[in-house]
Image (cartoon, rainbow, N blue to C red; front, side, top):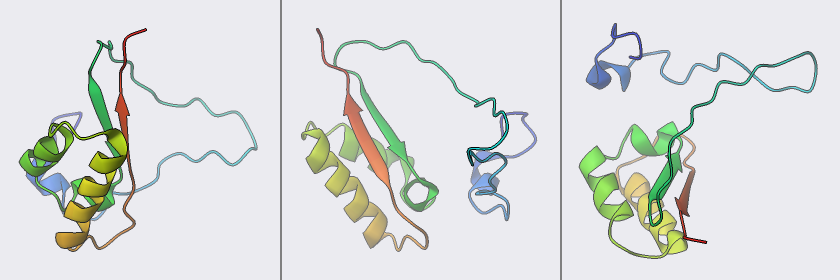
Length: 101
């Protein structure tokens, strides 16, 4: 998808959608891939596994995350959505709020 060779809708069903390309096993040197995003007070981040994003529509995730519930309640709501959608895989998510200092 990042290279523009795969449509997002096709990526959801691609046979290699969850292919692990790098592992941290404690041996050798690993150069982790990462991205940075500017944070603003009151931003909310959802980190989730494919057991969530592969079965729950983006609009439904956005509604659950934007509902204003505290992070723990939001996690429960997201996990419930994945459960009801029949998540065929492991389901994991983290909700993090950016709070002003």
